[in-house]
Length: 253
Image 1 (tube, rainbow, N blue to C red):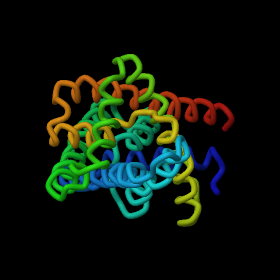
Image 2 (image 1 turned 180 degrees about the vertical axis):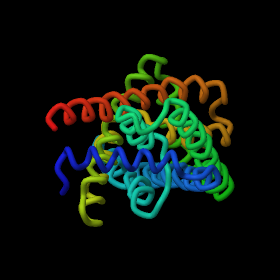
Image 3 (image 1 turned 60 degrees about the horizontal axis):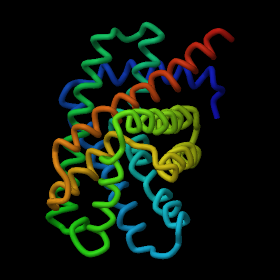
Image 4 (image 1 turned 30 degrees about the horizontal axis):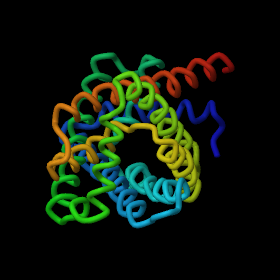
């Protein structure tokens, strides 16, 4: 495992590399990122919906399968806005990336993630029927409703907590030297945020539209949820991970 100061340097380079990636590559990798997180959430729903009378332990089991999405993204290739926020913000603090480059990169990756999430929600969820039948529909609607019922302030703060964990997962994965280390580095922080119930903007881009495609939610509710969650994710990744470690570790160098 790299030291925290070494992870900081790796993260700065990773952030610069994300900005330098071409537009078409960003769109492709962003689509993959949105799809993989959505498939991880679909796995969560399929697992937890089939477990009854297990209380909070059922949620823990569901949370344990969700990290597969980020594991694939980090190890096989993909771009997810939440991890991207942390890495590119770190490069910005290091003055390796301009504000224009940062915002442009975030915009493209967010749009591509949305396309990937909607693809999974419609084709795998609705068309294939993985979120439209029996207990799976009930769980999809229950999860989506819990998201949209949150106030804007609750959604924003929940988004901060989520990307504090996701940013840490990516940060730790950058520091791991082998595949097993990267998997473990990602698994536990991501599993924890899901078990707690924090909100992830891209995961919500999947589950709320999945409920919409089944006629159980509305696009206005989706927009009202995703915007505060997204900005909470920005604060969680850019401030609670990138800024804290950049300024905390730089002064020790």
